Image (tube, rainbow, N blue to C red; front, side, top):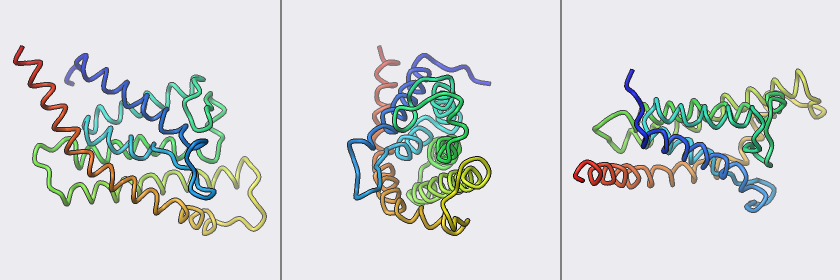
Length: 193
């Protein structure tokens, strides 16, 4: 197993911090009743820029810091009680999102544009499958589901977020090559000194 450099540790911490910031933009940014968070953006970027291993580590750090009580989850919440939240599955999904985007965009030296689009689509799919299923089970098993709540209804709620998630994912795909280039350039400058 390859050791992590100081730069790797700093970048993992940076992406964990960006997740905390991205989670708490919703009080300030809303489209109608749909809160805007940038967590999907930062999870995709973590994997794509850092690679699957380090991107996944960054998301695990974010989840761990929140579960031990730091108020880094949405609405400045934290602590182990968040495991019971219907939306905690979306938090967990960011680990899978970083891994998938890292495998398709971050680990490969040869990046093709089709990999970006596949990674973006699969990232949203991971986010929705894990998050929506957790939400459904949480509402059915340990919180009170709205009257007439069904599995189909849980998925239909996600339609309100889909346009925003598609736009955020498209934006991430625009940023990935620029961020990777900037990191390579920074790394080359360090090795030249």
